[in-house]
Amino acid sequence: MGIESQWIWMDGELVPFADARVHVLAHTLHYGLGAFEGIRAYEQPDGRAGIWRLDEHIERLFDSLKMARMTPSCSREDIKRACLDVLTRNGFTEAYIRPLAFMGMGAMGLGARNNPVHMVVAAWKWGAYLGDEGMKNGVRLRTSSFSRNHPNAALSRAKIVGHYVNSIMARYEANDDGFEEALMLDHLGFVAEGTGENVFVIKGGLVKTPPVANILPGITRKTVMDILDHEGIPLKEQLFGRDAFYVAEEAFMCGTAAEVTPIASLDRRAVGEGRPGPMTQRIQQIYADGVRGRIDWLSEQITVAG
Image (cartoon, rainbow, N blue to C red; front, side, top):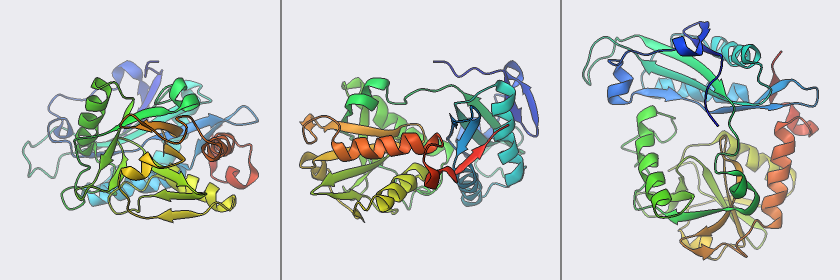
């Protein structure tokens, strides 16, 4: 599935897809200083597009820019309106939305700070990030040889463009070795996250997930935690090793792109029975219904376009 659309929002106006161009000397292209978000829109019961937790995503984008010492050229309301306009003008009822802020052409070098900051919002049709088979039957992971970026060497709470080279290397390695995804450990050897997903393990009715110390505080992660609380399922945020997956009864990954994806195995060791367990399936279904406006207590997180 391609990423084409008819319109992309750039610096305050909608432009045709083919005209959304960047100069080859744009600073971010060379050094990776930029920030982005991944947001999903889902068709609602009335047929309109609804964006899941839009305000939280925009707030995190602006937090990332603040941490990166980049001055946004647009307001939060501008980006919010752009997300809605891109959906409407492209006729999407379900789509993945990508806001991006990057430094354009001007001075070169690591000390350049006055280049223009461009802001973009694009959208495209995107299915299951880790594949329909993975959503149904679970994905196979391997523990990566690449450690998650050290929290004192990178901004762990920010979605910075250049940080994702770390994740790309881990994903390539896993894919080349025949796995769908990688599990990344932190500098101390504790479980951090996937290359673009947070992770949860389940045993004895208790759900565990790494704390926000060595990971990106995912918005889907927060949604899963809200679901667990609503359903009365105990959750503990704590550090743990990869072996927690080896003895877990169930495990899953979550993220805006990945949604709620079961984990079938890690390092060729089956998680539980090697297929999605009942608690994972329950969370997966509640999430899928919630983002589509079918659950009242979750519907308040939806911003409807049109």
